Length: 182
Image 1 (cartoon, helix red, strand yellow):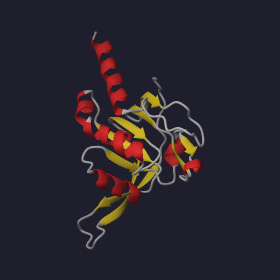
Image 2 (image 1 turned 30 degrees about the horizontal axis):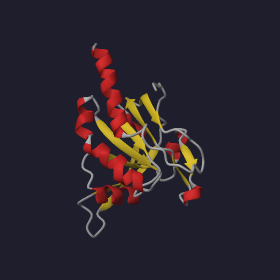
Image 3 (image 1 turned 30 degrees about the vertical axis):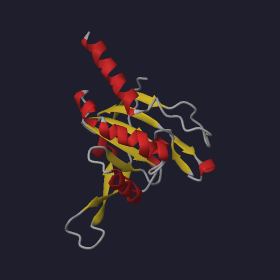
Image 4 (image 1 turned 120 degrees about the vertical axis):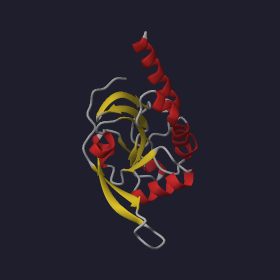
């Protein structure tokens, strides 16, 4: 689906490695804004219910990492994963998965997710408020294409996955490029 919606402006509280800090936790707080992530770039943003959860950790995030170079060939500058988890959890998750290419964005308070209209209750799973699963192609802060899983609702019994899969997003980008070239 094509959408011409601007992403909301928020400030994300991130933790970045700083080798000038001694000790076992050489990280410092760094505020990053929506502009830092989205301005002047064509990116893939995908969101999921939570770090360390089965579908997210087994398929969605690892497959975006694996297909990163294919996305670059389609004109994508970066791939970001946003989740309603804090910076500590997101950093630990990225380290556990050995990420090198996909960047993780912590949306600890859910502000970005709420302003995107994708915040849902997952109390039935003990999660609280989390993101519905979606992906988007965003060009210079404007949503070009939108991939939202079916069934959007609070406390959904299912965890649909397919529309926002990296394979589907990549196939859609390739098909659009083929149509443009024809």
